[in-house]
Image (tube, rainbow over all chains, first blue to last red):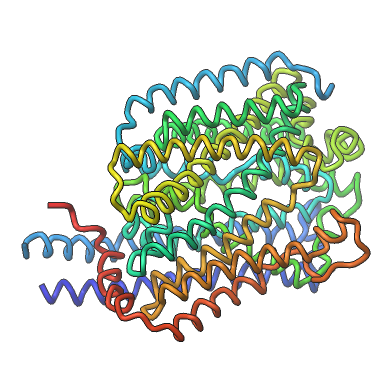
Length: 96
Length: 511
């Protein structure tokens, strides 16, 4: 019982750290993008190839970043967190 | 495009959608027996279904028609909005979805009130929810009236009444089961419509988006690919960005969807599907906006509607003729209906589940009584939205969606987060944070140039920024923390251990 309990506590703390990290990354990426728009318009106006400005490229990358963060979170929780939770739930049922 | 002229295909598409959605409602009504069915679709929605339904709830007509129009008229600047609307989803995923599912039953107030004193917290949280729902609903109803007048030639009032009554039928009889399926049908139609439209545009540019963007910059100057005047003030830009980002995690109709799935894992996976769908949709709006700019032309778009809202339908007519215009119009209509249904259900849950059941009846209402009150609240909200929709005719309500997001981010999000992750949060802290967030946002918006200068025609405004989020979000957190520290609450502290347990393991199965 106490073993599965500590394991859950540990994995819960790890999930919390991951959540904060991913939220912080998303905030920084997005706020950074807006700051560039606000303070360095000429940089974003730079045309990399016909039809593609740096601004559009970065905008698409922000969307892709959001997707990537979601995938990282789902992958990690499916692989690590769910198992610890399932074990604890089983322990709880058996404990009764 | 002859605006205000009935389009036969649009009428048929619109009729088919209403018939189909009422059939769904009939089917759902027969499966709605108790409050769990009415508010949470019996918790039987799958991850993929809920992902689509979340996308359906989130992709309003404002995003489809409004953002496409904004991109068509101002190029890159319009994209700032599409991106802002997506970045809130990782926040929902990481901080909100799973704990919410494990801690609550029907509304996000359930979570805030979990270990605090039920009644005071629920009044505050329901007020926060209702404020968001009210402004969002008014914006949607006014948008509906204008759009349907342009698309189908109905009068504004008739359009508002039809939307109100059809939405009422979904929610009143079919509850969350009907609302969920209407959202799913709408999300599929919207994604399909946007995808087909984008492909028909790209077919003219050998399926190379860059060729399209290049043509846009050739016709309208390189400025359309670069940030322009829309974001002139950095403070305002960041303020808007933060409200969009954290507001998503405080929208009652979005949060409510997490109670429709069987467990936290399903809630998590549904966010991944939703984000994939919403992200793809916003990428398509890049194509639609620039497509309309190049193929329809800015003067033609402005001639029909100065705000650009008709850019996507006009584009549909240019690339696919009357029939495709009709299809896209019907999709836009379905979009509005589905969003107002979701909002109304969330508002009804706040009124009946939070206020009536937990405050007036001290959690002692019978199942039958609860269902009756929930349906009464639905009728009340439908009447409210029809009346206000008509009252706000001809007024500029574009700021109201932004206002709804700002309240959601400043009132609901901080209290929700603190209640789940901070042991020392108290009843008074929650009340203070929610009320401060709501009132401060309302006051700052009223003092902003949007109301004072644009609406009231004054020479200056009391507050220089149009978006208060940068100030109100952190201040709500501070108010919640300071008031909690001043009013320690032993029971809340003790309840935190139980909360921490339930966040991960979910509710104990009733024996």
